[in-house]
Image 1 (cartoon, rainbow, N blue to C red):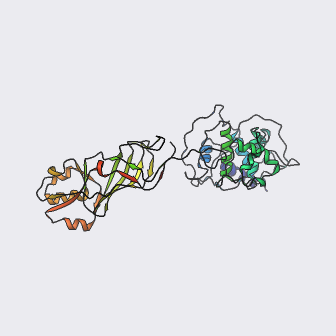
Image 2 (cartoon, helix red, strand yellow):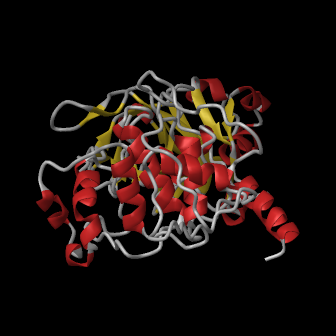
Image 3 (cartoon, rainbow, N blue to C red):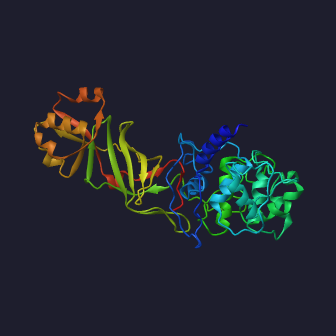
Length: 411
């Protein structure tokens, strides 16, 4: 390969790995990290639901890894031994345990020469017979985990720890002891099946990020993350709000809500009594908000919940409904709204119909909900000397029943 082409390729790769030319400052602090703020999504192809989201974003926040100029991380791309050495150099700041090896296939001007030298002297990576490093060779998953266990001087208390993997028979003999140690230190992350190691499969950028992150966690250098794909980790059971749960609600804006039959109106209710699980743990705190709307239901009106907003600002989609309310009141021509509607909140359709029927334009001074009545409903009402409305008492009529179990994030 011409040296000019290699120099350009090396510079591009260094950019992708988050490297710069020259000396590197240590990226690991001496004090254990006991808390860590979840970083914002940094990469277009690593959304919050990606299995490696926490590993990748947390390492990116520490400048251990970086994405590409187009804003992607390319989590499924393979990692070469040279690229992996560059990541190690950024992640770990450890003393040399041996002298540098003069690898015959790593010339001094090779883009990752310094990173390979440091990974070698720190004890993370070694070469092949004949002082060959093979920097452009894709690195297998087993080799990554072996290098981390060896570089951190981990030994297994039980070599049979590898039996947790259904494919343990495919582990190379050289890797058995180190992989047992890595397993005991919870450095192994297997997606999508936590019991399948795939030791000889080429490691992806996402997998290497997960392995390095867990290695740092084993050294108390980063906060632990909760992932079902970490081998040996006791994952906290995600709390849930079971289907059938009742939520007691109130409406802060008025004692009565009045809508037309066939009218839809936006409404936000407040949880007045905390919902708890069998251990007394609060699942939905009092003061939480439920955003939804009143909708036509049979001959009445029913509240349909859409979003649950917890006091900490977290918003969750929720499937919950109230009973169908069929209580009606009749507003007659010439009546004053103060006689029957004091303290009420009106749907926009009901407000227009009541104002037209009674001739009392003061209805406009009441709280009016956003929404609309169907054209057919409005046509039937306008021009008559009376209007029948549905009258809802929120504290009595709008208790909600959860229709579908809602998973809640661990707080």
